[in-house]
Amino acid sequence: MSTQSNTVTRTQSRISVRTLVNIAMLAAISIILMLFEIPLPFAPSFYEIDFSEVPVLIGAFAMGPAAGAAIELVKILLNFVVTGTDTAGVGELANFIIGCSLCVPAAMIYKRHKTRKGALIGMGVGTAAMVAIGCFVNAYVVLPVYAKAFGMPMDALIQMGTVVNPNITNLTGFIMFAVAPFNLLKATLVSLVVLLIYKKISPIFKMK
Image (cartoon, rainbow, N blue to C red; front, top):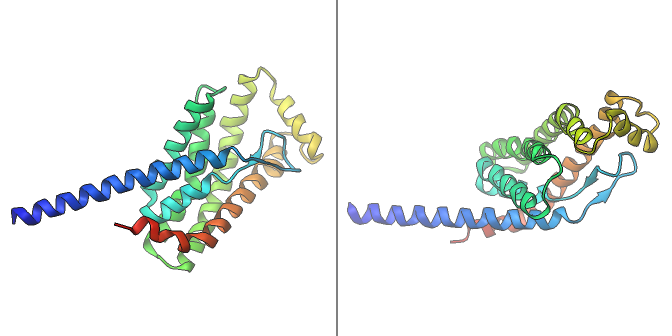
């Protein structure tokens, strides 16, 4: 009985170490992907798409929603250390919440239904959550914090949106015509990439 218990303990220890290594590896890849940002024609220059959520969603599918949130957290903390912050960490917290809003719901659904259909439904729910939560967080956290951090009135940020899209004339228009499409496009692209590559690379996370 003691031998069996020791074997189980060693197995659990190996799984735990492997999970931590996978989380660190995926977070490091996310940091690298954050360096490659793509500007968008319909949003101000400070809204640029990157694919740093791809490793997060892959990890969430492979190891569960808690691991996905851990990867997102490590990614944000590493970026905080490497690049610093202009918002006393508030912007980074907002990015963590928005990133998790895509990956955690998607992984929760996929964990219960590990099929292509389950993955698609999870990604759809995650995308909807990212758009909704992203709009709320940007309207009430990100934009006010950035306006204060850079010493400019909110109208100045909205004007930056008006320059690229004349439909943006107030905060509501900014959210509808810049923030919502931005998060929708990012979530869709991230989901598409993960859908295309997950099955090919998922065996890596099951190796002993």
